[in-house]
Length: 113
Image (cartoon, rainbow, N blue to C red; front, top):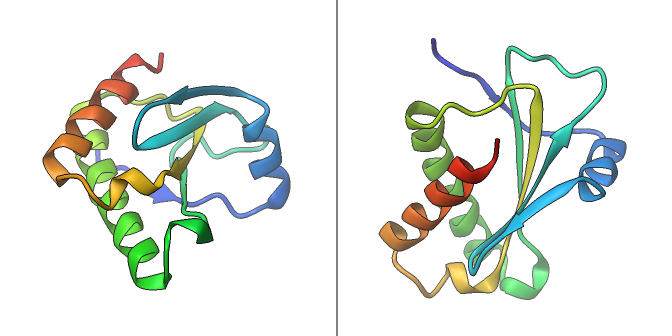
């Protein structure tokens, strides 16, 4: 089954997710939980990079990395489609190798049950 990844769009969704459970590591903080009135056929996930990290080029590079990793995660790890995810990047993502970041995120998403 090919999954469709959709970004969160409403401000209320972001605020409610920030009050739910979280998993944190050296590179990202992942907030996750149930959101009311969500389509369970699609995976809701959003990526956030703060302006503190750098200019738009650096922030977009981080988002591209995260999207690429998430496409692999969806294929290899059974994620809960009734959950919504908010991934907030940290500045350490710029300086480290893609492979190391990918392994760390795979471990974190496998912890989420």
